[in-house]
Length: 151
Image 1 (cartoon, one colour):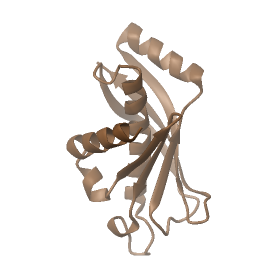
Image 2 (image 1 turned 30 degrees about the horizontal axis):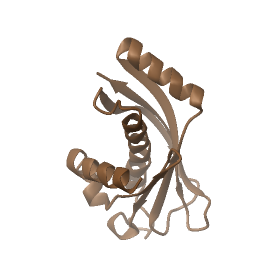
Image 3 (image 1 turned 90 degrees about the vertical axis):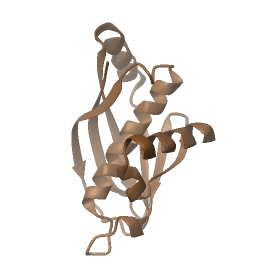
Image 4 (image 1 turned 135 degrees about the vertical axis):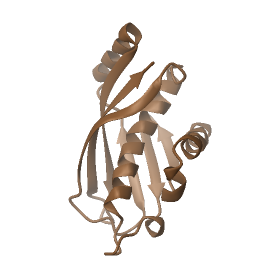
């Protein structure tokens, strides 16, 4: 699992340079749950909370990273390109500390449908949800994104 985390972090730093500015770290990949971390001081706004644009990026990257690692487990990471097609976000509670982002696995049927569509048509879509925890442990950010894998 640690190797997967280091691999993803290196890939993100190389291919998505903003991840370095965000201070993004891949903390864990276990049981199809991805956890990311980003420091407040690199993403702070005028109100001394985490900047909404940074939070959006982190939430998108949690889904992107989840999909990449799941594809890697399936031996499919080199078969296509992952893009975010659509995203919706809410910010119910300000993030006043470092960000802890979590993306959990979708329903297994959704994964199977995604994989089948990609193998048949060279393009698969999957909806993933990520969240960023506030200091009190509640969801400070909720994100739903539709990701596409295409050849």
